[in-house]
Amino acid sequence: MNYVILGAGPAGVTAAETIRQVDKTGSITLVSGDGEPPYSRMALPYFLHGDIKEQGTYLRQQPNHYDSLGITVTLARAGGVDSSNRVLHLSNGEALAYDKLLIATGASPVVPPIPGSNLEGVHTCWTLADGREIMKRAGKGQNVVLVGAGFIGSIVLEALHLMGSNLTVVEVAPRMVARMLDETAGGMLGRWCTAKGVKVLTSTKVERITGGSGIRGNELAVGLSNGDTLQAKLVVLAAGVRSNTGFLVGSGVAVRTGIVVNEYLETTVPHIYAAGDCCEGVDLSTGKPDMLAIQPVAVEHGRIAGLNMAGVRTRHRGSLNMNVLETMGLISSSFGLWQGVPGGDTARLVDEAGYKYLKLNFEGDQLVGAQCVGLTEHVGMLRGLIQTGVHLGEWKQRLMENPERLREAYIATALNSAHAGPVGPHVKTPVAKEAA
Picture 1: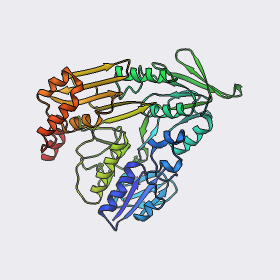
Picture 2: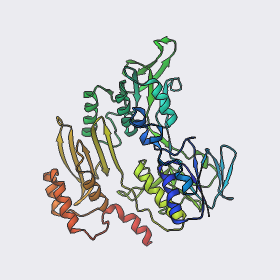
Picture 3: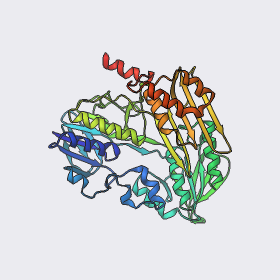
Picture 4: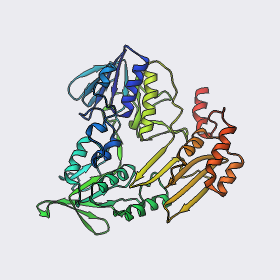
């Protein structure tokens, strides 16, 4: 069997290792488009402020890891897929024949249509190459503008702050990490960053970036929608990402926002699978396809896709939308349907001065979503209660009255359902599909 895996991020590497566990003799080729050994983008901030060296970003630390497993790593990008003849064409002119192909190409950063976004000193923070360029300009006393305060932006924010930069964050949304945190949680995070010396501008747009010898040497001028102009040595763009699927034109593989897959992570073309940030996997909470671009989901996709490619039929029942973010010492998290559901109930515990927040969202007597700020002891319990869809019974009302009793509720319901499988409405759709 000839396996080709396109993409050497967490999904691709996990898939390759999983295939090798099942198929000891098949040929496995792992194609990396970054021109680097397989690495984790989530490790880049730690590389920026010196916690780790470049090698510390690598997904596997042993130099001969892939060779020892009989996995061939090829550095090239995808040129196109000839699905009729089962051939993957690469940008270096090479053509790889495959029996099973996994597309795990991830995503690329969106560069917003800002005049001047192509100037020297304006960078995204997505690759090791980006990291090397940022390190040349960011540092103690340097003015840095970060465009975007989403999940990735808030991780980069901490690294730039730890490097000693004079940092200004510009976010078009009315709060930080608006796709993960509600008004209360996002407001807390913004105030926390401000208290730590970071200037945070929300509901503000970057309208232009200019530069040249007339602007304090090689610095940049960043014009804002509020009329202000910021001087910067470096501008970092963190305005979102887009799935890498353009090379699939003409392949027959269906793409919406991401690649369409079935419950076995197989695409609309037989023998081609997809996993990770380019793939529309099932959201456990809704039972519907969605883009859950987080590393744990990519790893889960890679494992399941690898098993199916190697002949071990394994359904993907859905991934929990779960984000945990640490920003300059403040940990915030969201789980499942964190915005709540129509007709559902919500319990809240708010300590604005102490930067602590707990929000629980219920549908009936099931916990379906949650948010935390400044609280870490609840993370595992929240994940367990939401993922299993356990019925809380009388504990639902107790939590409505006092969300701090979450540990008691978790222990009580865990004892009552120790032998029960997932029962929540969030798993009904996939199960019904299987029965049909």
